[in-house]
Length: 416
Image 1 (cartoon, helix red, strand yellow):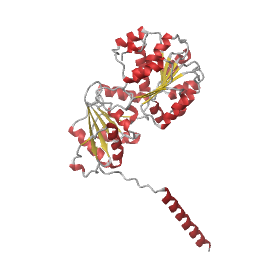
Image 2 (spheres, rainbow, N blue to C red):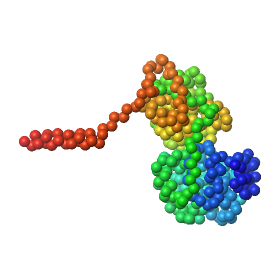
Image 3 (tube, rainbow, N blue to C red):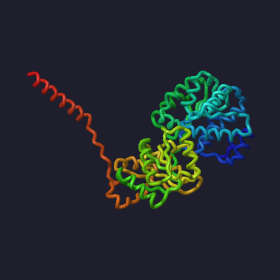
Image 4 (cartoon, helix red, strand yellow):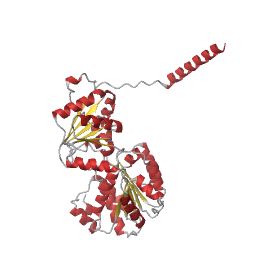
């Protein structure tokens, strides 16, 4: 389907033409019509499917065609990170280039001058405010932001925001919005907490669910089955054989990211770390240096697995198997973008076997297992199932009763 089949505003279509937007992606063709109709929307779609345009385009068209007052904040878009908020704002400026629609990105990690600019912009009113929850709430608590006239409220990557602990902030922001509004919720996954939020804030929504896309065909996927203690020596050997150029390594925690970054520095590798403990300016600097080729390896938590646009990534390494199968798709999707080729390697410890098998079920194929170099020692058997020893509720009751009986007997003996 083409955009001209869905949208009617000539200025908006001219902007899309200049940006070489012709054919709708599946999420766009399914989401744009109900948004134009004024319905709430629950959309499940991964990053990279074109969901930003799926909500911005119909909102822009309605803002212009229906003559919403320019002195109000008419639309609020919530984003989990500053980087994604900036990307959404850039797309917003491109789509509205020929139209009198204003936008403003509100996020933390800025200096006093930028904060003051945000304050003035919010007081004057912008058609579309794109914000991270914490920073928007900080402005709201100062008392000069009026969200009582908001007509559109959009949650982008809602599951990511809840994972980052923004649930309470989001609900506080919602308390400042009018009940009569159109709410759009976009999420890559649909865990129970997202389902509950959808029930609370959406009214008879249209539901659009796209199956989780398989990784791009040009991503060469491999895995090593090893013990946890073998991961770092294995990584060192791989980098000695093929010096890294544009590599992202994903690890499961901030502590492991920091330790791994230190270890790679000792190998004289140009490396930087990315995690939520860094100030925003530091994170921006890492991204800029990586794009410029001054850093060859970025070790990161899942903070950059979604919503960050970095091209030319040659290799993605999952130092730890992601907890959710969908996160594997997001992580390795950092490579082989724009029809390029790329490689993805996953290190699977003996305790991560079952987790990776769930990923293979999602992929509907088995990822090729490469042999660990012999000098690193014996490795686990991938076919072996991880055994979880759980005491049945009956046995737990019996054990508790037995312990209590022994306690009573000892107490009786001590009193005699």
